[in-house]
Image (cartoon, rainbow over all chains, first blue to last red; front, top):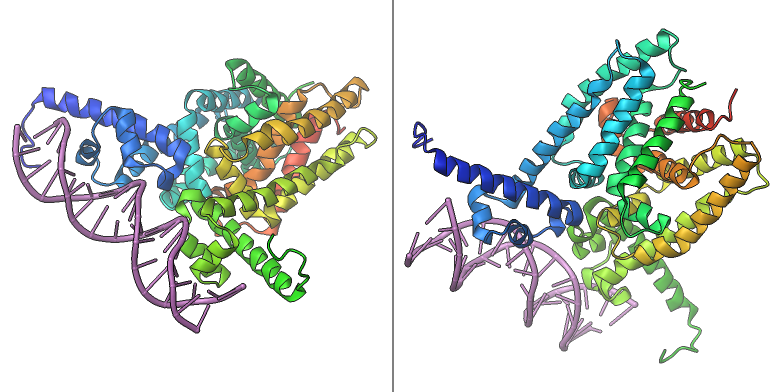
Amino acid sequence: MSAAKNPKNGKEAIRRENVATILQAAEAVFATKGFSGATTAEIAARAGLPKPNLHYYFRTKAALYRAVLDDILALWLDATASIMVEAEPADALRRYIDAKMTYSRKRPFASKVFANELLHGAPAVKGFLGGAMKRLVDDKAKVIEAWIAAGKLAPVDPHHLFFVLWAATQTYADFDCQIAAVLGKKKLGSGDFDRAGETVSALVLRGLGLKP
Amino acid sequence: MSAAKNPKNGKEAIRRENVATILQAAEAVFATKGFSGATTAEIAARAGLPKPNLHYYFRTKAALYRAVLDDILALWLDATASIMVEAEPADALRRYIDAKMTYSRKRPFASKVFANELLHGAPAVKGFLGGAMKRLVDDKAKVIEAWIAAGKLAPVDPHHLFFVLWAATQTYADFDCQIAAVLGKKKLGSGDFDRAGETVSALVLRGLGLKP
DNA sequence: GTCTATAGCGCGATAGAC
DNA sequence: GTCTATCGCGCTATAGAC
């Protein structure tokens, strides 16, 4: 605001880097501790910065949390790209399951922060859920309905199909420790995610009449 | 300990009732606020008791949380009853999905407390997950394998089948606010749960080759 | 067995020197 | 833009009268 026209790129670069570092650390800590369980001290330590530095970039803990969430919501909207009327249903759904499962493997913290937010009644993202997300899902549900009308797919409630797909894929990020424990492993490996993806794809595709 | 042989049933009854009231209030508050977000003051208020009374029955917040969790774990183990070799696979699975979905509708708080615990890395129930729960699931997985070997079921990884079933049913308790928002409703009704149960059953049964 | 009043402390946030 | 030192709130837990 005050010195807005000043193009000091050095300082800008430092800011961008520090902000990114803080956001990454915050995502990890919020994921495993939740909002109230997380402490700014732990986030700062993980980011390798002194605590007041955090408050210099994000005035409050709540503001930092919002910033983390906003990143995650943007990610979320991307994943449905493969669901288009022109696509072959089997291909599109397989790719969607794959995308969601990859997201669970590569960005487990993001998934957990979002899950935590939902568990607590989504105080910070209710607007998003009933707004942008609802519109996107309603849109994609129409695609599913078009496929059904064209006889390409067994009848199914499109919305509930999405709920099941989200649950089945995100569970491997959110509840990884349960799955690992039941499988008798310390951590999930990429082999486990492959097997999970195959299982979900097989169940859903055959469940929708898409496999002989 | 000190006056152990005294059969004063009046006091015993008061204790049992208060303990039950506290546990119920605690389950609700832990479910929506998480462990760190929950305050003993709020639990006490919801139970209609003064705060120190809580500490009289449960010495620490952590001990109260453990007690709430123990109740939930007991519930969890019951649900798999229908999975037996003698049963008809389609019947057994439909009943299992039904039981889990009913549990999501009737005991959403229990499901949420458990989900929260898992999200945070299961510090309090890791032993249970790798112990009693793993043994039960391994056991039930053998039943599924027997059905597959007998040609009653399309081949599937039994463990991952369970993971998908848990996810697909519990999501309606844990993430109810997301589902309600996307459906454009304020709260989920029993009609939504019925539709959800039908969708999951249809997908899974057909997915396992159990429907014409 | 119940409850008021308070101890004790961890945490978010800031002041202010560098 | 960075960091030490500290304030003050809100929480768990308890002491002690009833």
